[in-house]
Amino acid sequence: MRDPRRNPVPARYRYPRRDDPGAVAKRRRWIAIAAGAAAVVIVAAVGAFFVLRDTAPPIDPAERSAVVSFTRGVLEVEAKRQVVATEFDGVGRDIRTTEFSIVFSTLESVIPKQEGLAQEVRGIDSPSNLTALAQTLFTDAYELELEGYRMLNRVAGQAQANYPESTARRLRRLDGYAAAVNRLDKAERSRARAFEELEELLGRVGTSLEEVRGPGAP
Image 1 (tube, one colour):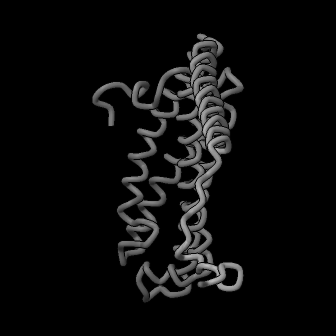
Image 2: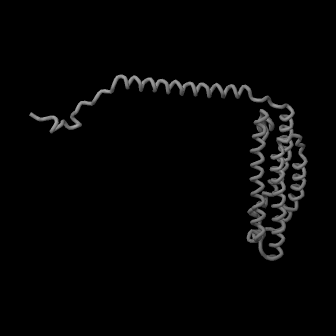
Image 3: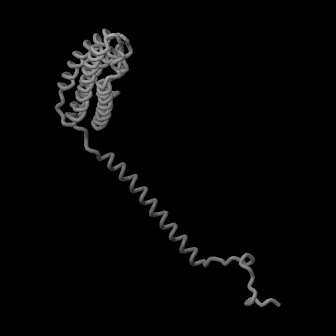
């Protein structure tokens, strides 16, 4: 007969050992305790969320009025700026015309208008400190745009003086052209950041840009 001590049964043929009933019960208890603790944490978190939401500080009517008034002022100036931007788009930063006369007439028209808009946005009534950053960003956008228009006008003058037989698109090869376009790009980024700030402020006082614009507004 086979001596089990000298020739034990291979492991794959052995019967699996049963777990100790006491250990199984202990594991089940720990699993139940962990599940209960997780449920308590979830319930507490949800309860805290609703408590914090319901106990949020009330909106200050004066601050709400200031932010809404400032937003309306910005939207009025922005509507005028869009008219100026559309006029400038006849030439555009990529210089869509070959005629120097069109470049000069367009820029000489939009530059004084943009100067007026920059003054308007600086003068928007901002009685609340909440709107200070947004006003700074909008002001930067208008002034950078104005600077870009002026620089393009100077570059166009240089191009016409140096290359009188060429077309207006020649100005795109001059160093000042890239600097002018850079100002216009910075203006767009500043305006986008200003509107983000404005949206955040309006949310804090319980309204939104769409509500301030009103129904049917562009």
